[in-house]
Image (cartoon, rainbow, N blue to C red):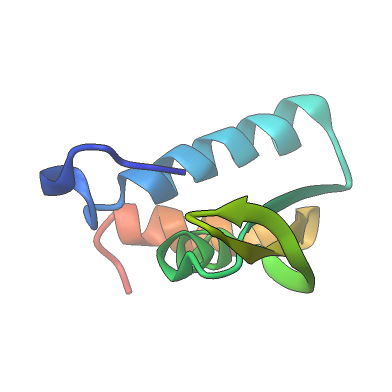
Length: 98
């Protein structure tokens, strides 16, 4: 997940995109769970994924070579029940509720 224009970062667009994709997946494709990997040092994107219901399952050590060094990957997943809770919180925030 990357928002290229700095002035658009931190406004919830990444969360909205992930939630839209997960809504489509769970509503139309009917998986039990969705899994992804991300660079373990990318705290911003990991926080977005966690707000969307993802849970960190593992760290794969030194999986990619980036900027002259090896970096870890985080493995995350979200199941249908976890996503349902995240969707309720997301919809409430869209309505301005807490």
